Length: 62
Image (cartoon, rainbow, N blue to C red; front, side, top):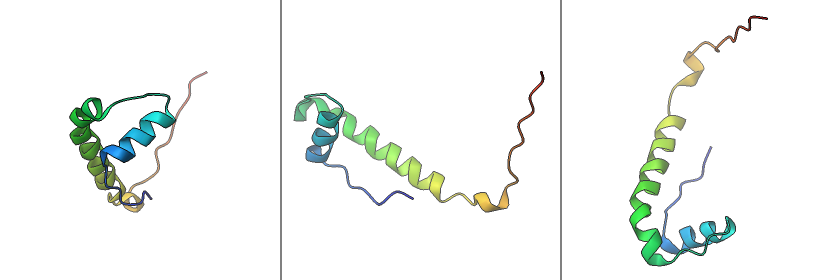
């Protein structure tokens, strides 16, 4: 679902600015590995064979 992304400081700076943050390269560099790990986790989630699972049924007690 997601296009492959390579996270660079310039891209992170643009995303932070879109969220209203004016972070510097020095502030963004420490979180870059965490962002890359999260994107890897999303890739693994998207590769799960969900078509083999039955849908979850939600029961409500009134």
